[in-house]
Image 1 (cartoon, one colour):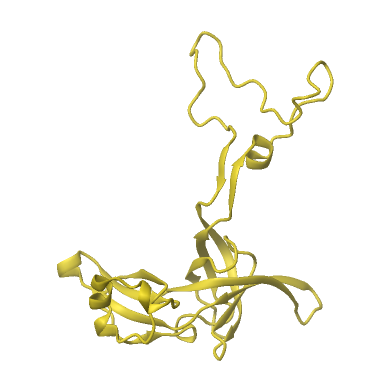
Image 2 (cartoon, rainbow, N blue to C red):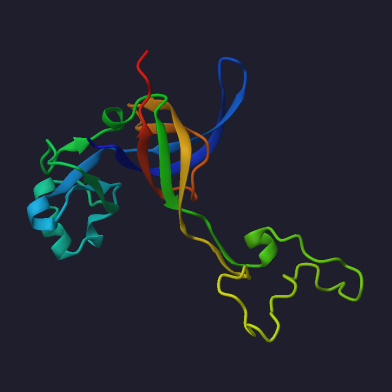
Length: 215
């Protein structure tokens, strides 16, 4: 059974439920996915389907990629190509399309994986949540300093994994415990309760973790 889908993050908004409570939701553009390749257990060692996500100008396609996508008969060049792993042989063929209403139902519990926002080189206060030092006792200019990082003669070095200033963000993150609030089949928009990683137009992988109970 296919339990994953790909989409592009649109924006974060708010809605109000029947009880008048404000809910923070994320809108995800989930266009139909076209199957471009089916990987099998004998040749590739696992079952999977390769899907085309989004569109871009055809002039940016290379000749090998054009040959690879010939069987899918795409009208436009794909923006991304991503795989969805399967446990068994799918009842699909190259050129078929997957839509969000076939994968998700309202109130499904999901997890979303994406690339977080890059924040450049950051200090320990922004990166790790340090509180900083006092402005008194001769260190008025070191309020945002990490403080002492060294050891004594044993071990005589800084331990690996020490929380230090450095590159912050632009890493793959997964947020669990989210829920599908609404599915717009006409506009291909999936509305999720909660926030997801990344900025707008970030590629997201949405995976069902628990199906909604039938009433």
